[in-house]
Length: 310
Image 1 (tube, rainbow, N blue to C red):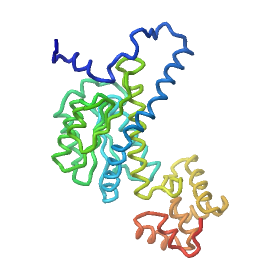
Image 2 (image 1 turned 60 degrees about the horizontal axis):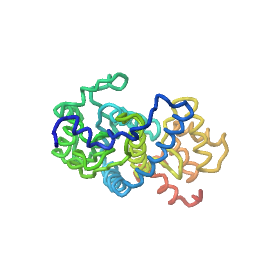
Image 3 (image 1 turned 90 degrees about the vertical axis):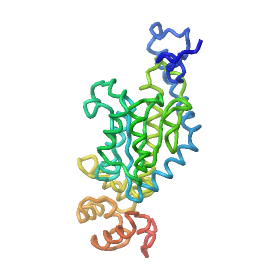
Image 4 (image 1 turned 180 degrees about the horizontal axis):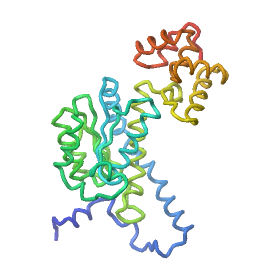
């Protein structure tokens, strides 16, 4: 007989299904467990590929808004929220942003990043309030992340995002989910049952990270934060990144390390600006103006330079 109990709702979720009733994890060797998990993980990229049409549409709409000055705002709880905050936190050092282009909100706030506050996900009102604190608008994209696809905290945030005119994207690892139903783009990654039943930090977490990588990285590429494969807006804030900046300039221009360092010193260790001065022969001031006129897109400046063939 059908029932509307919470347990019955869980039974309907792909991520809560039992992979193998006869599988006894506690009786397997380490080698067997490693092989099992690796085999299971190998299916995740295929599940992501199946959702590429929706992912592409979501990123196209998102990157268009980011180029117009909008933000990407991740909203999630538990593992989903932590993955969103992780992705957002890595954008400034990688792509030279000020930390206000990609944001991450997690149910329970910063404490939930290191301590489990699972009950925080149960309130739609809290999701609305937390998103309201960053004042979403029509140029923003709000990405609601929930493996189950039905987390109240995420649903509340997405409802407010819709009311605010923001683009809404629902990212889940189940099918026909509530967050997809209220989002402009519903990305559903059908990862199937977890090795440890219901532990969505596993396959669902991996799938979520893959999709978030695409959303943020491609949006930054479209914003002109890369040249060829190089992160030309990297912030050189430690010894490793200083060396990386030198390498980026040498790879982009074909010059030697010493020349790259001189150019970087003159450009206050802005790799993109240093590359522009080397390739075009412009002064730092003129190269900066050219980049500003090109909305920061180095390829545009390089293409307009008389001797730019790199």
